[in-house]
Image (cartoon, rainbow, N blue to C red; front, side, top):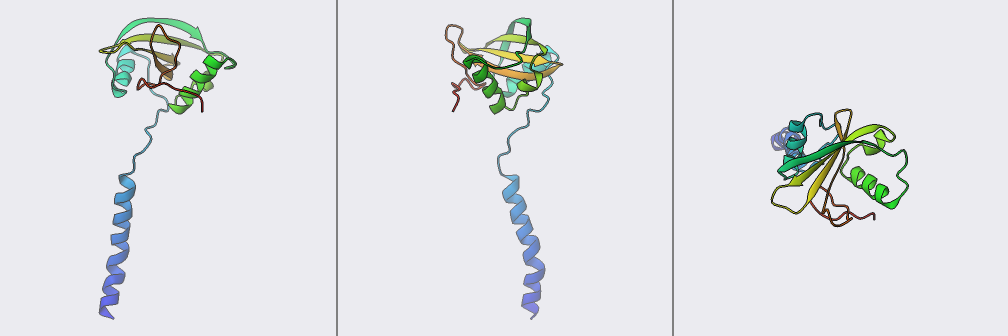
Length: 142
C-alpha cells in the first residue's frame, strides 16, 4: 500500500514535467504581428532576422490596391499571408515601399510599410518577374 501511495504522489508531477518539456521544445511559428518598421534601423534589424544584410537603394510612396485582382498582386498577397504580414488589412491605404540590395547576393528585397508597420516583404531578381519569399525561395500559389 505504501508503494502505491508513493507512486500516486510522484507520478502526476513527473508526467507534468515530461509534458512541459515536450511542449517547450516544439518549434513555434514566430509572430509577425505589428513588426515595427518606422525607422531604417527597424527595417534593417528585421532584414537581419531573415538572414540578410542589406543596403537601402530607394523608397517611394505607394497606394496598396483595394483588390488584388491580377495574378501578380494575388501571388504577392498570398505570400504576405504565408509570412503572416498584414497586407490585406491595409488595402486602399498609403504606404512606403523600400528597396534594398542584399549583400553577397544577386537578390533585392522590398519591404512595404504603412503606419510604421511592416505589411509586406519579398525578395526578387531584377531581371525576372518571379515572387520569392524572404529566404529567396520561389513562391507559388498552391
